[in-house]
Length: 260
Image 1 (cartoon, rainbow, N blue to C red):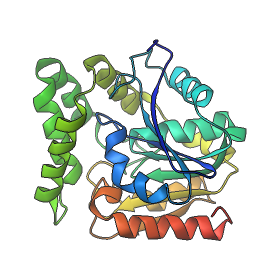
Image 2: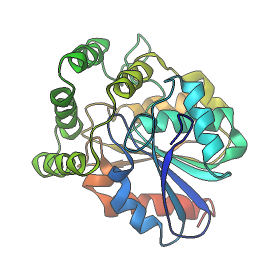
Image 3: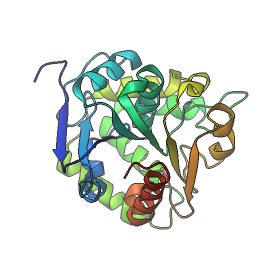
C-alpha cells in the first residue's frame, strides 16, 4: 500500500456515507453503527493515515483532506467523530461539492480553549498528552480512553469495550498520534464554518470531558444552520454508548432533509 493510499472498509448499497474515526482509533470503532447504516447506505469506514491499515502521510490538514476527497466517492454524507469531525468540517468548507450532508459527532471546530472559546480542552491538558506520548504511547492511549468515557454512568463497561477494540485492531503509529495532537492543538475552523451550505448536524454527549456540552451555545454563532442533538447520559463516544438513540437522531436528521 503506497503512502498515498487509505484503507477503506465498504459495506451496503445505495448513496455513499463516509465514517471518519477520532484520534488514536481506526475504522473498527464504527463497526456496530456501520452495520446498521449499511441497510440503507453504501458505507465507507476509513482508517485515517497512520491508523489501522492506512500508511502514514504528512500530517497537514490540507494534505489529509485532499487525500480523503481523492480516495472517496462524492457527493457523500460525511460523518466525523472527534478529530474525524475536524476533517469532515474542513472538507465541507474546502470541497463543498464533495459533501451532500455533514454529521459532527462530539466534535469541534477548535479543540483547545481561547479567550473567546471556553468550551474545549485547556492547552496544558493537551500538552501533557503530547509529552507523555513520547515517553509511553500505550499508557498515554489508555489514559485518553479513560478521559473519553469520564463521567459516563457506564464508563467501566465502555472502557472494557474500547480495550477490546484496540486488541482487535492494533495501535496507531506514534507519528500519526503526534500529528493528530498537533492538529487538535493548532487548527481553528470557526471562521470558515459560514461557508458550509449543506445540511449539518451535531451529536453531543452531556458528560463529554473533551467537547463540553456548552459548545451547543457557541456553535450557532459560527454555523447558525447547524442542528444539534444532545444525548443526556453520554460522554465522548455517544454512538458507542447509546447506538440506538444515536441512530434515531441521525435518521430524523436524514428525514428532515430528504436524505433517506
